[in-house]
Image 1 (cartoon, one colour):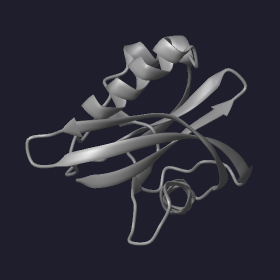
Image 2 (cartoon, one colour; image 1 turned 120 degrees about the vertical axis):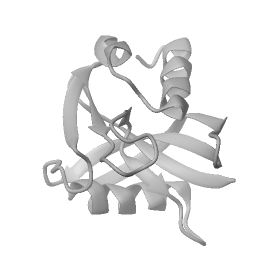
Image 3 (tube, helix red, strand yellow; image 1 turned 180 degrees about the horizontal axis):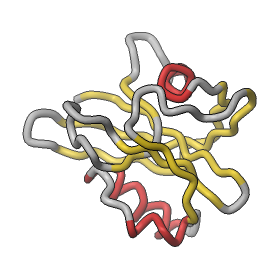
Image 4 (cartoon, helix red, strand yellow; image 1 turned 90 degrees about the horizontal axis):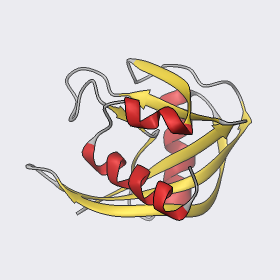
Length: 129
């Protein structure tokens, strides 16, 4: 099982989403920014590191909003979604093909990776979006 941390970053009523680049698993699909945890790293530390690497921003990780386990054909991931606040910088498209700020109601209009879709459903069920 691969542990992955993702960020739920809001700017007013909008949420940051990223489109995966070509040649990656789920290429062309949307996701919340984040990535794999490294050895001896907490979920929050992984999230903060990944946001710097992928978006060039410093974030402060908050509480866990949702998590899920999803079995893709070639791997199983445990995806944890944390609240996060940008403390420095503006998101830049360093590793993704596109980044967008979207309204929560519009998330359903984007083709998300399957594991992220489960997180969106959980967020909706809990009243976070």
